[in-house]
Amino acid sequence: MNKCRLITHRKKAGELINDCLNTTALSILGTPQRKDEFVFDVQNFSINRLNKTINYWVQREEINKHITFHCAKHTFACLLLLYGANLKTVADAMGHSSTKAP
Image (cartoon, rainbow, N blue to C red; front, side):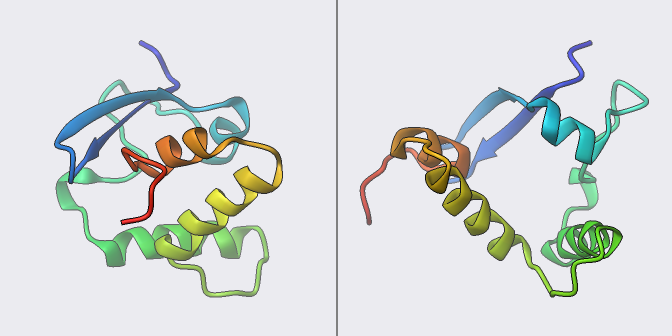
């Protein structure tokens, strides 16, 4: 089993994307104990549950802010750009099929 596999579904494009989490992401998220274990329970997915999971991580790191998935996603994109990632890489990481504004 490839423990770093991340599969996402692009809703607008209707395609599955296979990626590999880097070692930093794996150290934060941990590796699954079972082959069928997910970081997020996609069968019972809700944005509320996702935000609770993110805030659990935020509290665990003693960050005193309310962070939503939307905020975390865009902070991630800004940090990628700040550290030199190109727009295509950021667009791919964000699940966008293009670097052009709508």
